[in-house]
Image (tube, rainbow, N blue to C red; front, side, top):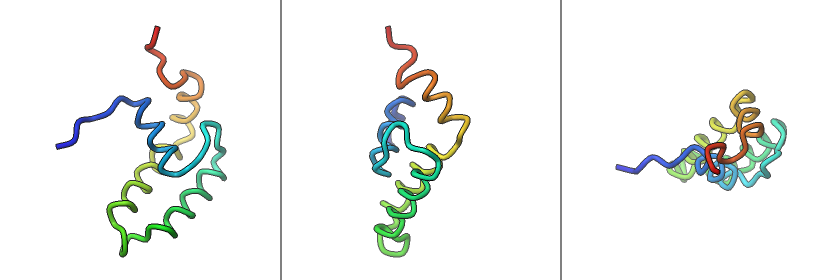
Length: 78
């Protein structure tokens, strides 16, 4: 069983999986997602495809992305 990682690390990892910057637009996220899906199709690389899909699902929500930008990567840090 994998240990759950903190939310800010999930965002960093998701951006790394898709290869996008912190301030990527919705269009850039979608283009990166499509690029990665072509590189890792589900029938050939299901594990990597799942990572790409999960990363896109996390980053594509505009409300969550806005909260991440406003709060910063770790709002509870001193």
